[in-house]
Image 1 (cartoon, rainbow, N blue to C red):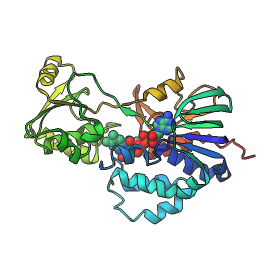
Image 2 (cartoon, helix red, strand yellow):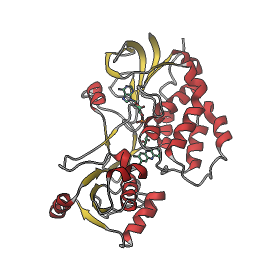
Image 3 (tube, protein in one colour):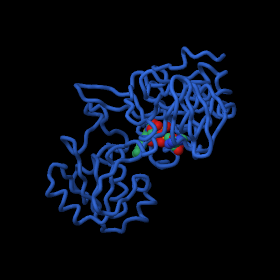
Image 4 (tube, rainbow, N blue to C red):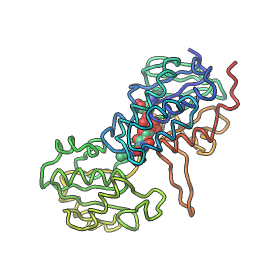
Length: 336
Ligand SMILES: Cc1cc2nc3c(=O)[nH]c(=O)nc-3n(C[C@H](O)[C@H](O)[C@H](O)COP(=O)(O)OP(=O)(O)OC[C@H]3O[C@@H](n4cnc5c(N)ncnc54)[C@H](O)[C@@H]3O)c2cc1C
């Protein structure tokens, strides 16, 4: 039960990391442990499968092409969808898994959750719910959970808000919804609520209700979300747009709302928080602790871009790919 590498979590980020191992040091695959309680594609498949990606097919194909081990698979699937169009997230999860299937078979899989990591400097003990493993290097990509506020109003989970069929099971026509957030997922949830016949009060925290990529905003909305925002700004939908500093209006909407929904970003879950403790993540080296061999990737530990003093976290398959390739943490590992 001793491994050179342990991948904790097997969503998009660590699937890409496995493609990286297979490309740069394939002999390490036989010495790799992968731990995940589900092994079913992470959030792309579990939480928002029916959402269309905010990146286009070409970007997904390009990401797979960047790894030697998945380049030929990328070529095979390149023509399956229009290159300039987004696809549903379950399509990305499926192809990611298929691209790395031969490499998954060589690793040792544990259907379990890591609850703690002990030890230091290339000698770690991973405490799982049901057993313990030893590893020299840890790649920690546990994903994140949606942030929420504590308004005393029943909450529609983000995963349900992003699936039109589930929305209809929560709300009835005429219901009033209080929706926080106007980025990509906020726009998609807003459309689902309106399609179900609801009236929606939308609380935003940016200088304008919607920030668009086409206006040069780094993290601005594009694709489906931009089309939805354009239709809202025409002004004919039953939507109130409220800036969060207007507390009187927010409170008044909260008193009328039968449901709240929060699309305000993501945070680490409690187990991940307790595993990392006070460690300070360094996006440049991807190290979770200074001088340690514990690295983080994915939505929990992304790379970042700073523009005019403002930090943007880069969360997408293309940016996870860049992060893994740029940090290139296996370049000095021997397979002896
Ligand atoms: C509306 C919406 C649209 C999005 N669109 C895109 C898009 O177009 N492209 C894109 O790339 N991303 C998109 N995302 C973000 C997407 O969810 C993430 O990019 C992606 O799922 C993150 O991958 P990950 O591997 O970091 O985490 P996850 O996919 O969440 O995977 C984490 C895995 O770790 C496991 N895990 C957690 N804790 C432990 C533990 N303690 N021990 C063992 N295993 C553990 C979980 O079971 C899970 O399988 C979107 C998100 C939303 C909300």
